[in-house]
Length: 254
Image (cartoon, rainbow, N blue to C red; front, side, top):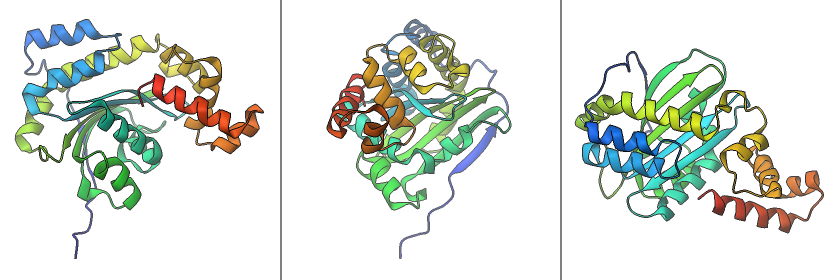
């Protein structure tokens, strides 16, 4: 009989003010990437020598409680990163981090840890762990009035799960990684994340490469509407909705 899934580990982080253990050259490198398309790739490359993550993703949520993928990268090909992102888009409501990031509640910084075996829902486990080949995930969630940010590091099955040494190293890097990521998100959304109740407006700020129709379709899709429902709302064919949605996902790298 397979072991019963455990609950993911969630811990409040009391102090992230320490300078951490990161090299000055890595701080400078990541700082130079703030606001640029290569920032999330830089996060992964800076973290690699310290605790060997296979994937990284950055998610944020504004006042409207809609999750937004800032970016995702993978050491073994963007296709696996995109596969993981698509899985999360299907199952974000079941995720520990998403529940922690919801508006309301006490602000703070939180660490979460989850292995494949901790996931009870079969669809979630299949799409977010098995298909992209993920063994476990260690995250830090920063919750502030008006928004929340999740910085997620994953290990591929070919590397194996994070151990206690990896956790200690990551804890030492958190002050710099979180600070740089928060500044990148704020810069990318032009300081409007906390007031971004309109999903379409948020997409216009964060993804300027999308057409107006792609923004409309993607905004409704992010709110959980099906292609048929979106077609009815916009007065266009369902096949047209699917085409716009595919193009939008491709433009933002999902």
